[in-house]
Length: 222
Image 1 (spheres, rainbow, N blue to C red):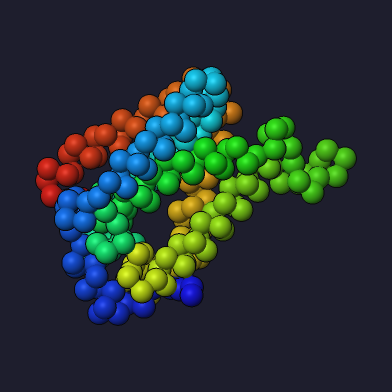
Image 2: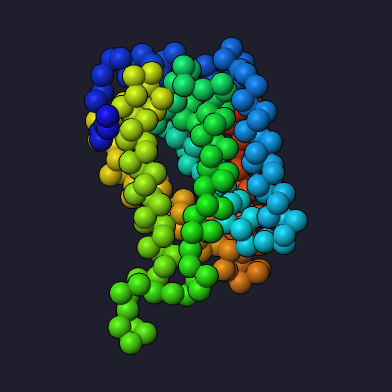
């Protein structure tokens, strides 16, 4: 039911070799429905002027795209990315490691994580007399990272190869530490940055994503 590490098998490599990036072969109307749901969530938060929630969503989503671009570059250079999605599991593959459904989920993940924080975001768990302990933002990021790592472990074990790990040294532990913790640190901490620092972070993040996509897609690298 769960898979914790890549197995380096030929079957996994064959699934990756068969990936058709940005092909509409499996396209269907769920694409539009998911987009409508995401649009509704964001517009609802903007309408309520819950801008911090929107910042959380965009912060995580930008980190997600930088990771996916990096993963695609690794795949181009070494032959296989760290993670991949299979043709059979999605309606549309954006980059070798991310499909439309997964990407839209990450567009909501930052919002979900931020909303799960206590009303007092300065709260610390296990503190004594107001000293020590662990920040609720850090605890929340670690908890969400653990949950998402376990879900990815389940996806990696699915029979249609929903998620594919080729390398034997890549699996739940490195995903948890190097990928998901940074994702949720972004969503939990960026909204409470000073306005200028927050704006700088988001602008730099998204300008970098845009430049990489505009340059690397036409070159056939990602």
